[in-house]
Image (tube, rainbow, N blue to C red; front, top):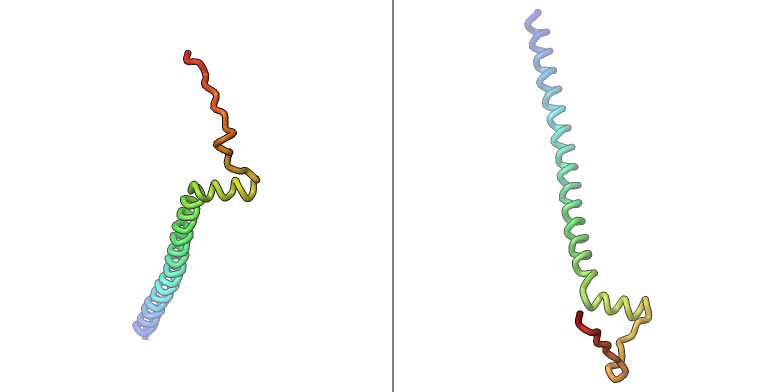
Length: 84
């Protein structure tokens, strides 16, 4: 009779270990999905950062948000400084 109790305890331990492993695998899957999502976000942000500083973007921002205009070449005066 004692061996039945020992066997039942052993089987209960095996089941408990299997349940714990299953929970850890599920948690690992969630973390892996979050990691993949974060990698996608990082790639998108890097692209956004690299494309935001293009010349065309700077010109567009200068004209639309700051009201800057290109200088008229006919009225532009160049100042030459004496060499030291």
